[in-house]
Amino acid sequence: MSHLFYLSTAARPVLNRAEGIYMWDRDGRRFIDGSSGAMVSNIGHSNPAVLAAMRAQMDKSTFGYRLHFETEPGERLAAKVAALSPAGLEKVFFVSGGSEAVESAVKLARQWAVVTGQAQRWKVISRFPSYHGSTLGALSLTGYDPLTDPFLPMMVQMPKIPAPRAYLDGLDMEDPATGAHYAAMLEAQILAEGPGSVLAFIQEPVGGASTGALVPPAGYMQAIRTICDRYGVLLIHDEVMSGGGRVGTFLGGDLWGIIPDIVAISKGFGAGYVPLGAMVARGDIVEAVQAAGGFVHGHTYAGNPLACAAGLAVLEEIGRNDLMGNAARVGAVLKSRLKNLMQRYGFIGDVRGEGMLLAFELVADRATMTPLPPAMKAFDTLVELAYAEGLIVYSRRTRGGYAGDHVLVCPPMITTEAQVDEIMDKLIRALDQFAA
Ligand code: PMP
Figure 1 (cartoon, rainbow, N blue to C red):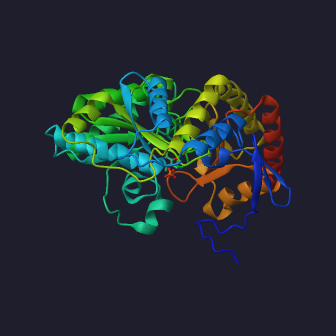
Figure 2: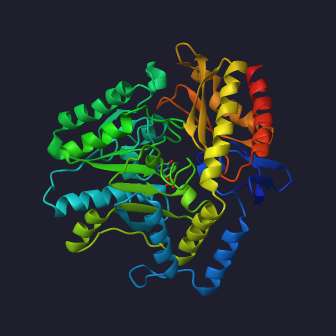
Figure 3: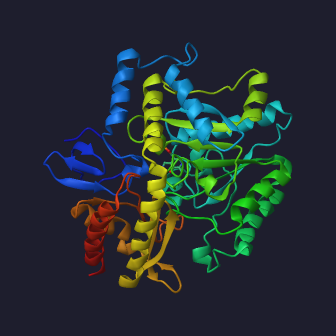
């Protein structure tokens, strides 16, 4: 009997070792990590440079409490993150995961509002569907029924606007009017709430688990930035999944040249080597809070030297091998191979994403984008068929609820074109069985 308990009830093999994009269980069975875990292992497993950096740091120190010590790896990593981030995002606050990064962003925003005489601003508007984390604050921003329903009512209920799913609404992705249409929903929501009460708007620039790599339509990101500025609403980007280079740029927002006020990153930042996340914020926001006595927030393990040394080595490895370039190039190959599947399988309704953050959506009818009936449990079935083929992919019910399914295909950024062939062969075998 196992003494572990998790959400999933599916029996899983015991992991033995992992290297590059491959993982082996205790019986020697090999799996391709076609989803980088949960879009985490961005540079693959057992990277020698990262392991060496971790060993070297372990010989020096593994923990120094942040109120007692600055650390060299922490200082160097913060400088590196600031250098990779767009102008103005220059202050870095370390945490140990994505939910912590999102909560930190919201708390910094809130404290900034209070110390700058805007204490009446507290509402954070988010999108539906969306996923921002599993802790109660981040969950209240999350628009995803399967994860929120078991806990209703939310301890803090926050307003939501529809995510810009042009592919479902039959709107033209390339037409700036489409972006304006969805962004106008933010303006309407701000006005409905009372502009003076709205603190921030949070969104995933390229969507993750809840939307299946949703990419915003033309004009959307610019319009959102303009509306936030118009009403003094902070723009928070949740780049826990899209950040760190997976989409081909360090941040998803970089794809549109949009600079948010605060960003949350994690997952690929520690890349599966260590629990690591960060909030990156506008310098003047942090300075205002610091001048008023400092940010009243922190997590015990945050910014420990071992985690920072690993995170630094991950970013150095990405830079040394141009892995963002590889994610963009090989990601484009993978995306076109996935698009080709639409000719073979009528039940693939859409293929979307950027870089190595890619997904396809399963539908009953492509013309109407009607979701597969929940009874089909494609979410479970296809994942299990791929698993049996030795390919790990990541699937969730989409549409923000219990209807519809998407499958994320997000291998590590080191994946080669030959490995894309390997992934596609296994995926097609699974899809053939699913279709039968
Ligand atoms: N935000 C997004 C966009 C995520 O994808 C996730 C994790 N799936 C989180 C927040 C929460 O991160 P964590 O599980 O590390 O707390």
